[in-house]
Image (cartoon, rainbow, N blue to C red):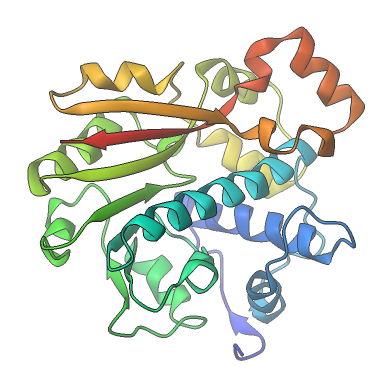
Length: 276
């Protein structure tokens, strides 16, 4: 159990780092509901320990629910991979205050959570580093992080809630780092549609965190298929629209919009690639 009232100031959570609260609060909200789409007690534990005004935060409902649905998709991707490769390595890029490892741990995998030093500092209040759950306090754009990952096992890399805060050039650099350092990789990445990035620049929620997250969005892609042109050896396996995982959970207005404007349905997707 985390120590109560852990001090986290706005100085500790500048710019991108502060956005780590968005999915955390989203899971907290759903867990507190009787019929929430996800149950994540660890998120509740963290929220209740943080000395940060989170309980009065009112996130944009469609984004809040979407953040939870994407969590479910990523969880299932890990479980599917580790069923086939029980003694494998998972690298979680831009981990924030992600709570996935305890949910998917099969007692054999080795898990690496990677994020900026200020984020890992906060994370250590809630998670203990072990021989199978390790932290890397570096930027995803620092190629040296790859030196800390063993090269002798099957590898799955996750990139949830990060790509849209990077530029096109930066996203390509992340992929290049992976391609240059590992021979064979499965890769899951969350991405926004470019239309959604544009829409968020005009329509932002009223909550300060919602506004900040929207203001930092930079990159979107129509389909992960386009990424095959980035470098040789990138293979597009498929993608899933996040809203399809729980469309009946959205408001009637949102469901109508998904039907009338197809791009709205695909505004957030999970892309599955293989690098060979």
